[in-house]
Length: 254
Image: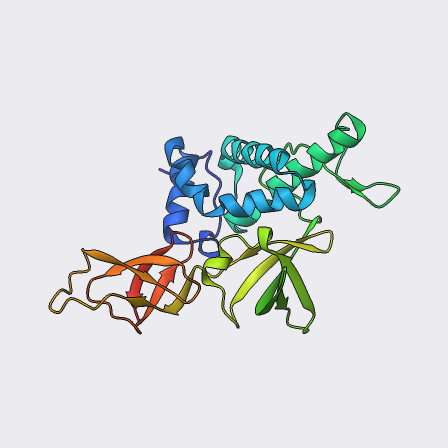
């Protein structure tokens, strides 16, 4: 019988099968699996906090606070949206509350709204199933080129979008012209980039071992960015492989 306290609906829309399994198991009390669930998003969470606070120490604190709030409220997560989107929204709210405390010395207990000056006012959420998303905008973007110090993307209307290195996260591992991802914006600025769950990249590696097709023994290989990944012994230089961008692991040769 399903746990009545676990809130899931339409899980197909969000994350990988493994991520969905982890969400359900953590919701049911296996909290020791939470780190495995959030590990792919650690850099993105920190980058989102840093984009708002511009202070490394405060951003580290906020990232930790966001993780703790996500764990405390994960039973209310609904899989209608991506888990990463929910986590980033919590982070943004925590960062905004930290910034508001610094400015006013307190957090006002009022509903989310734009104040008289048009500034978003954060609050602690009583219902964590629906985190208000009016502070964030998401759109599909395609990587074009690097213009120091910015990585330049295009949206479908050919608008140029510049993203700082600190907000690129793991996308830097797989970056190449034409890479499609989803950028998250706060106040008109891109604060993170989410990759597809897998990419195909050509690798360079040591010579293949003939006759070994088990895939159990691995060797190091590199893609064009210099990122290293473990591949089976039978994979050769010049082969293209599918890589899981969340776990950074080899999936198959293509």
